Image 1 (cartoon, rainbow, N blue to C red):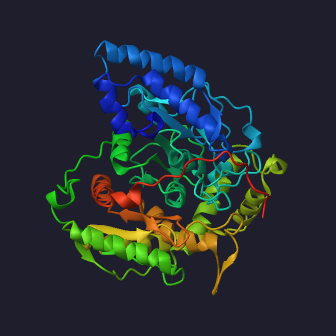
Image 2 (image 1 turned 60 degrees about the vertical axis):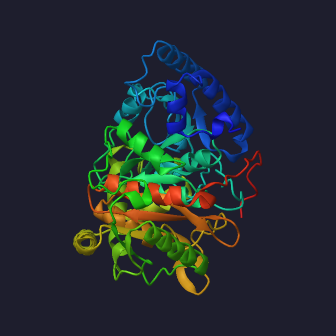
Length: 471
């Protein structure tokens, strides 16, 4: 029998409407699961007392048959601690905001709560969302449930870990250069970076405003679509691709193996090629290897992000006034940002336009692009800036080379578990489409998910382990 904490959002909604399950008993099971797996440090704050009251009200509404109009009524949700939540501590991962309690919800939170979602708590993140790992010197490390010695990815680390541990069926994350996609891949869950601007970022502490996205995270693409609709950005299937594999029309999918300067490890390449074969068996028209050269994408992204982030922290009155309260890694990035010249910034904008044009031309011949999220499965904690074997580039740069192009172009990208490496660590794949094709990327991701049941079934049993000593 499936345990209550293992049910997805769509499953819960169906059971609630049929009065076979109670939102209150589901929330109680959720709270127990969070306690049982608390050693992973996925949650930065909890709001269980208020959540219990909301679950009771949801139960009363279902009993009155008054639950049809609220798509997430009684469904537990966790929210990244970068996003404001009224009455619930929101730290942005920084000691500067350790006691910060917003007076109102960010609009994205308002929308999901208006649809009846029960806010359980806030999730761990890298400080100010400015990193791709699950380390935070103020909040402690957030542990990858598949192997605590490996990073869970970042910056939406807690949301991905909580989902993998089945602490909640839904979560909100943010993505600037891969912050939804990287932890989703390393933890074996699903996530969506929507088309830029499709979900508003008001009430979210900015990292780099021209790149920042809010997006849904879940254990499967069906629940991603449910949460996107609750966010006010429904992703129907106007393209007719369907979610039933062979039942939908064929979609032209190009496979990108990534930039030459960040080659895929053999295990990841095998997973990518097998996924392409699976999509072909579902009736899609798959091009095994598209020619997409983006040699300077990261060169463009870095100065643009640095300059925007520095502006945010200066305007917020945080830097340099409160320099001593930042983690050293953030200070180092802010200092680098001070060195970005106008000439370098303008050159980066020109490269960005070139990347956008190259991606647009790709989608003249393909409707979607399949690629790996990272050239490696989850690395050991502390290795994100170390050089890979035979590669002078750090792991951080190697991973971002696969996630930054979609951010530069503001393209919708869905992540789904693609398979496993030889150590039985999950390998995440991403499906990218042109702007506005959010529904299509989710539809094809869902078809792949349903066709790969053996890949999607296993979940980590949970952990109460504490973080190992810093490497």
